[in-house]
Length: 256
Image: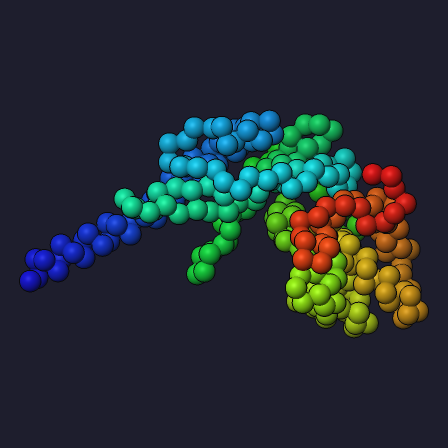
């Protein structure tokens, strides 16, 4: 009985190891492809032949948009499947972010869906030019952000808009803060300084509300940021009722 128990324990341990190893090998193969490929090759990923990745599903090019200071962002979403054990297949959803300055690729982020009890899994690769962009951001917005702040902001998933989903209700909080509250004004200003255009738009929205109620006055540089967000009129992820994944400009004063 002891021999049989030991054998079964070893077999279970080996199976668990192989299951985990399959994902890590598939993940490594996926990243090797992404970080060595241009946007054209990534757009044709469904035609790529992999060793450990069985299939690419749910591929979608969400948006290509201009952020600040000449930085363009392209966002892709997909799901890759890999062998879980002899009889099963598992999948992993992934967001891919590509960044360009003046047409030159300067960085990529791979953001993996996080399952229960897992640590967040993010991989990134950047050229030195991305630091010039961050310096310009810090100068204009009067921040002291790093490359890590850039990554954290970019992968923060948020949708700008009220009355989204089946409930169709107005948002009462965002980013763990109550909305339309005077005591949160400093946080709203900080949202406007984000690398994330949706978060910036939420900051603009809240400052606009408080200005309309004549509850605050902006500092000169804060007014400059407020005006910049409106004049830039970036493409924002929003919603229409139960329909999500809509990317468009918020303000109607631009043709595109």
